[in-house]
Length: 188
Image (tube, rainbow, N blue to C red):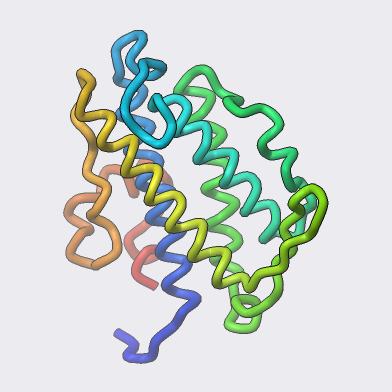
């Protein structure tokens, strides 16, 4: 085990954590009874469907910007691009893989590089590490709201807090296999 702090490793692990948490959460959403996904609930967005759609559109915006793209506010043209969990889960898995690939390719120099986010009438310039930290916080914030909303449904909220440390391997083995990962990938 290395004793040197590696910020690239931190963001890579957060990207894997993001994908696993989305996988678990959307699998729980897929088990909801008809009408529960769309039902009005208490949260920043008033339903699980609206919240999960918000997560993906924001992911599209930031991941595209970090990749050097110019999608900008087009990411939000359709407020709720997905009506069903299956399509949403596939699209979320795709953007999660893009984020993982981006983080796997990070270098210390790239972490401090400038990301240009197209905001319609202006271009916002931020450091890559700040955008990654912001995106991670955004995802965690809204997934927590969906987790709480699931408490009022027929489906128990999944565990989202076992991932980062090596001892958590006992809780993630099945999903790691489903996602085509290995523990070696996650602990590097």
